[in-house]
Figure (cartoon, rainbow, N blue to C red):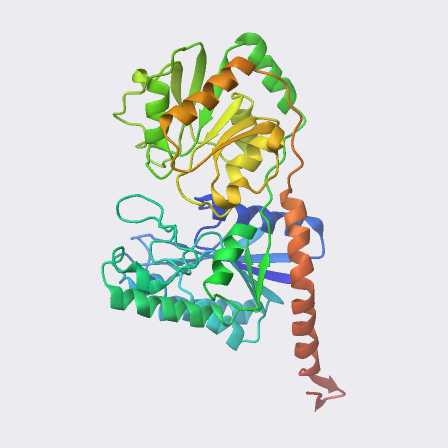
Length: 422
């Protein structure tokens, strides 16, 4: 089976959780045998002509990167005929059995139209609410969660700059998504919002994300760190934004009545700007900023912490970091953030409501400090390999139908004569 993956970023140029999922599933498919994977993604380089295509290879997967020029219009971020034409040409040459479309902001949703015009089955995987919300994550201009469920564009007047343009965008994306054979969501929570909003009726499936599971040396690395310094260590990867709960963390830890612990703040930006100029010395405990980590560095980060602080103030569609922590037996304090809370690991997790004040978080933090560092078994969560197998369960019938249709339409040449068997 030949699978064509389309995502706005893809190795060797990667950024964001959805890109990690797209890449890891693609690698798992390619590694299992019997599956060939190709990719299409985007880049922006001033030294190349607009819409030039550069082919590269990473991890055995050939990636066709389309160069998007700067200064594109808002419409071109979701509908770009130039990109669609490039994708049509690449897909025509590759002739895949199936296309797996992930995040296409910047690329454009019209790729679904051209793929189906070529007779290629399409599975569309949503990772956020871009298809329903112009602001992608249902975050209002004041930095707070919208909370619509279902999402109705008529209620978006106070959020968008141009309501007419937002209506046009919503109608276009709904029509484009109609070309997909199946539409997946990473959690029951996300699928529920999409379904109640009238998106892709009858074609929605829950396809839960996997995670990179711990390697054989993780437990030893964690034990060595605890032996060297017995203090409890908190970890926060959300960055200094309101929607990820940084103000809540700051308020709770400023007034904490004890400081016999450490904390790690991950620098998630590409340019080192997240924590620049922020005074973290006002927080109780010994906090430090640590470098962002790639997939190969996940064990190294989680071996250095005992409790993950996942304080999202919006309803997440999944919560990759939470599952990565739980798979390694790292405890979690988290908000009831939609799909991020669907793991069912009650023994490892303290859940606080979104919108709860610093007093509630402080109580949970003090309870973890009383418990202290301790060995916890890893929670059984889905691996990327298992996620890839679940994808194949969805893909095989579509690819088989594509091959059957294609084979029945092929002309057959015998002794110089051509017979059309369609």
